[in-house]
Length: 380
Image 1: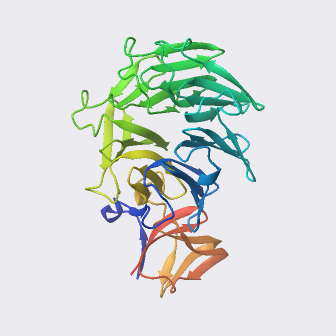
Image 2: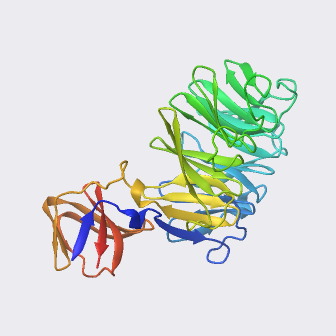
Image 3: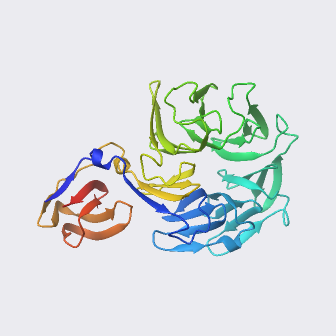
């Protein structure tokens, strides 16, 4: 007998798959960033750049100005930008270009690059903020522009037309129309270092290495989440934040990662670490999501986590009308049927069908998709 239905506690932890130097072509286990483009994972490590398409790995380390990759991003035209310890490498889909201190005014250590609506690149380095438009690079912020005099730009994001600038020990800046305003420990910011930032509902969320999670609200106030305000807060040393349908996922140094939501004045967290899950390492540096699961970069390797409860927005899977008997799955009308393994790999597809024979599949749990309505499928 087959069973399709709501998700129970059996699937609360989901499925975990690890990628390390032992089972891939990776030569270093520290995963600093992951970018997913058309299903392909671009993976930046402490020593190398790779792509993985769920089948094959490709090593792009030789094209980089330095093998230590800090971050990876994509511009409005689909070009891939790789920020390294000695400049940037840019991939247009067919060839690579490098931008370093040898052929530009940009400094070597590049932390992150983001793009405005006109595809102007804003480049954060340890020596200030640069911008690049139509191949021309100019400096936007240096030591004379920052308050206090500090220039290590760690992370960047846009909030409308304002560029949000997170620094190391220099506070938080907002750049708008060539004018900049700064926040630091003297005017409300609890930690002067930002490790990651994102915008959600016009509020800026900031991870910090000592102060926990900070939200800079639209009204100008700061909302702080750390052990000083919440006894059950998982960690104050945070590295990254990812937003998925009003649920935040936050990576920490030493405490694994945790999901986080805040509604009606109540914060809720659910922690995943090496003791209670399949996480390979408790130092989580980046989190990205594909169609079915989360790619989690740690200091000990890359982890793919298929959280079954998050396949749909609710805690229950949408259940279409169906019938199953003698290994045959039948729906009341024709449609597109796809079956995935729990690690996100497609194992079967049929188009414009109302019935399929699944006797070739081994026993276990799968995810079925019928006309974009998904259900858990257990083969006994």
